[in-house]
Length: 331
Ligand code: NAI
Ligand code: MG
Image 1 (spheres, rainbow, N blue to C red):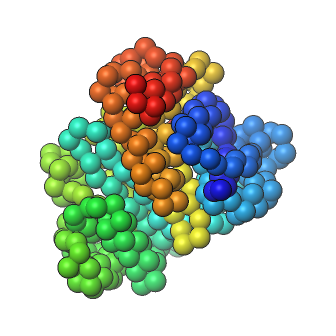
Image 2 (spheres, helix red, strand yellow):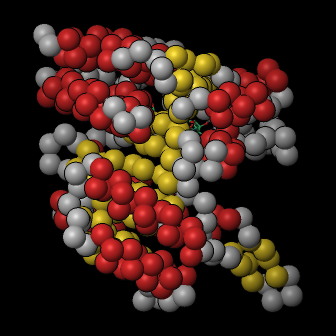
Image 3 (cartoon, helix red, strand yellow):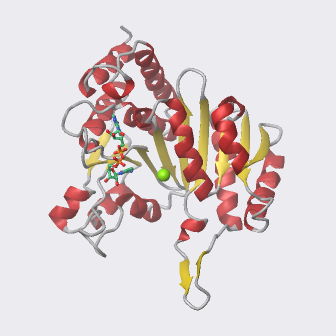
């Protein structure tokens, strides 16, 4: 039986994660190990992500993560470590996977490298020259593993094309390396799948004008961060956007949204982003049929307009879950 480490977190994390677990229990048998992280956890134990939580995550086959509230920088200076960044690092989750699917016309996936680029934290200020500098790190190894991951993901998910997004015309050395490795790996996969590449600025425009031209996108950390938020605006907002963080040994699945303090406790949070994240977890377990069953049930519930207020409906979180379960049971 697959073991799932469940981290509900704060705010609506405590509402949408139990909703997703109800749906998981409808399609299979799973063992849940509960662990704490987030602002409440920080207040209780003085640590937003205790070592015990990291150990539990490592004992399980995957992590299902809700959302956490970040403390105000003035409140917990120095003592705070971000749960999600800590888990990404501890579990070596180098691939961030964000499907962008409105269950109508738009269906693409953005795969973002999650460990390198300008996010390595090497920024400094040269007092003498009065220049602020950030280093951009793109390694051969890091590029190879994310690009291979993207091609394997594309094949395993019956996708037709992988597009590399870059700025190699200006960033000739860093993105030059990324693009060269992409083309080398693409050449090896060319019998199985198409590949092409676009500049990042053009891509920002194409995503709005003609998103159907993309299938699987693979890109570096900063571009992926920006493009994935842009793309999520195409599909009706945060309530529908799932994500996965995957490495060679572990996977963590979470909705893109945060703890939504403005609606927390009201029972009206949209559970679909978390339910679709749980479906991605089933794909990761090799239970693709179960994942598809959940996605089809969600699609039908959306078509029927049985949705929470963020999507213009008047259903509660629990009522959306009931509708999805009805669809899963076939009535
Ligand atoms: P947010 O995603 O929590 O909320 C933004 C807006 O979207 C709010 O109006 C909220 O009501 C709405 N919304 C989000 N998810 C929804 C859902 N499932 N159903 C219906 N409406 C939904 O982002 P915000 O307000 O910027 O951040 C709130 C807290 O969450 C902050 O402390 C932030 O640091 C944290 N956060 C945590 C993340 C994580 O745990 N991975 C990601 C993003 C933010
Ligand atoms: Mg972001």
